[in-house]
Length: 407
Ligand code: GDP
Ligand code: MG
Image (cartoon, rainbow, N blue to C red; front, side, top):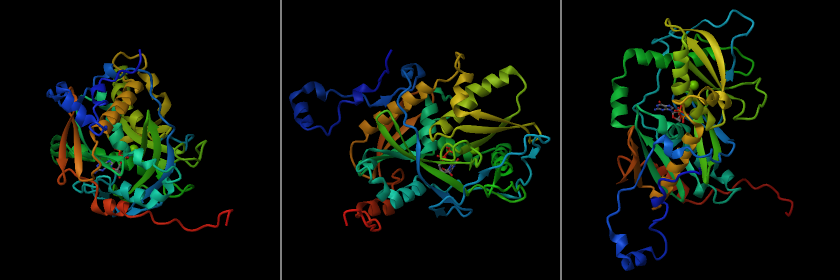
């Protein structure tokens, strides 16, 4: 069976086609009220073969410092530095430093795509080797694509994605749902501490220099981030997205990003086969989606005991994660994730027809329902900043002149 396109009604009527208006006048049938477009998310609809996904390549990177200031370089990149394997095994106290050495990022500040847009503005000249590539691309955060990949299996949290077309490019930026905001503001103290523990694990596993060792005595500041900017393509959708990368492994078989990158995670120690099964079904799905998209090959997991200590480590190769649920009737399927994402991107591309940075199509989804769309202009949903729109509307700065063979 081939790929099912349950949204094909919406592929055809692009109101921009020449003569479409005339056709409607001649064909009263087209005047019948059309149901509001929506996209179903049931896994069964997306179980075709795995779609084309271009091997992600890194276009560049940027860093955010302790004050959340942007730098167009890799200064925030850290180096994978696990404890020696012959030694006694890890004994990381993840609660150490909480809350006195914790500087959490201000989650009230809505950054949208701003940092990624700054990178794009400063590097658009370099993309023009392939003229017109950007105009056909989708620009977003990796984390937004992760949410799309896991949507067919998600039973808890909905999402909202704002979409605007500008100079051909489709930009997608998440809007925090009212439920997510309420949950964040009411986050229980134990959950706050658990979030800290995830960052603390990174500090135990990473050094600031390729040959250095971790220094867990310092502060944990979650303003700091290293972000890789990647190019890929899903089906016929060219993608430019950025994702935060935990560290690079100086000993990795390939020193070429993203193959040298490592994602770090913590999880509760498991004791029963039932706990492992549930871990494979739920956590590995999210981990797979997040790391598969940018081509990060390994997820190194620290298992914590009830006292908050990491006592064992395990590496999960991204490309082997699916094997743990391949024969599980209640498992997840990478094809479903990728086919749904491709279907959503087609749905978004055919819905957002007008090129206007102030116009927003808001795609909303709640578990068990379809993706629906509403249309808005300007505040509060418009997310492409004036500085970006104005700079992109001016001419490209001319590249530094280098003598060419013909000169
Ligand atoms: P992830 O895959 O969900 O971790 O997100 P990305 O890697 O796509 O990160 C995109 C940008 O969002 C980066 O600048 C991150 O520092 C930032 N970011 C990641 N997670 C969060 C979050 O939970 N809240 C906020 N406000 N920003 C986040
Ligand atoms: Mg991580």
